Length: 362
Length: 196
Image 1 (tube, rainbow over the protein chains, first blue to last red):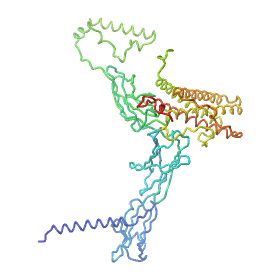
Image 2 (spheres, rainbow over the protein chains, first blue to last red):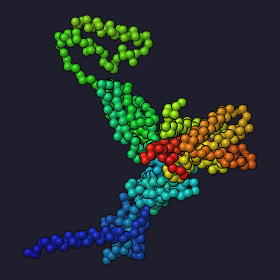
Image 3 (cartoon, rainbow over the protein chains, first blue to last red):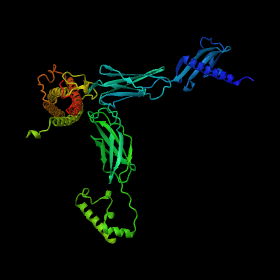
Image 4 (cartoon, rainbow over the protein chains, first blue to last red):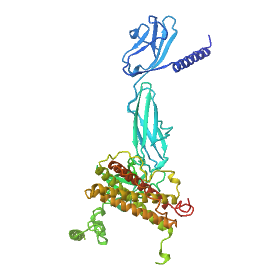
């Protein structure tokens, strides 16, 4: 019996060679780009119209109903008809023609955005197409400042972005950025014109932390850091906008802070979990950043007291009346919180109630 | 007052810089408001491009971060002296054109002119603090106006002046912040210890 191992090796080797040859031929075959909805006619190389041929699409024979003589007719092509097309002479199966058909669309007007998140170093522009073309596109960007052409250096990642270093600061001359997108089926472009200050938008603040304040049931201490992309916060200080709300409510409270990277919220609802975010803006120019990542925090609450018997209440009452004091959040006799003669009357009333209650339990 | 009670030069500089930054901020806000009034009253398009106007100091600068403190102060002083003369000229033209008919614009112009004068004086104080000679004003200010501009040309020129002044107000605040920074080596403000 023949040794099966060498036979198997030969089969594998033959398969590898075939795949390699097919890939090479695909790479070598010309690419034909057609618009979605177009009618496509493919000629079988130099074969006569009345020659007997076989067309394949991705290796599968194409039905003769799509042929006009030796020409392949594809009407109203769609994206699914992209692929490798080949034409073989009828009897000899010699390959006479092959092409890679790519069905796509010309580009629509691209979407372009420019922003400076690292002022005063420079700015970047990024772009994308509103709808895919399904075929390769080339993007070309030009930046003009007054009469001067500037080079926008393409970023490695992401690919649809480039950056420019400011050569001048404080200029009133506008920048004009034109992005042109081209593919085999057409081209399109868009232009942005802006001045230096208008596109300044920092990244959101980082490392936002919110903590309860011990023994303060209505306070939350919030701190954050300047975005790391902002190169010189000393010379180009940022101001901040803080927003917070309890999870159970929809309405935000807002606080604008002209300096510092911390703030104490003093009007939080006791015991309620809060959601807090911070945004940043250059002190003088530009627009606000996006909101930071949200953080959650709940103000400090007193440890719940254990339930006591009547006797224990009686024992403790004579020593202290602190257990009958209103909770801190509802301090109505707090000197700092009370204003006016009406409030004084409320204080006295509360005092009488407390005294009466004490008497009942003595 | 005994000499021991007067603040050190470093503290005085920081104080002057802080006040100057606030002045510049207020000035910018008022110039931006004035621009809105001016554009509306003069019937101009707010987005109209205005070519660089002769005699208007440009705020645009290359290598801003490499400037010395003295350069910053001198350039700022020259600019605000020029703006003082330009705004006075605009006010005069305004009164000629509209007389008392447009008091709002005239008042706003006069208020900004006052702030520009105050800021120029503030810069002189900073230069004095550094024992720098204050340059004379003979060479400053705009060149003699060209042959009488048309009304439209005057309006565009005014737009250019105010826009550039708004840029300067931002630049001045940045310049003063740079000045207020302590130098890591000497503890003095950067750039002021060295001569240009």
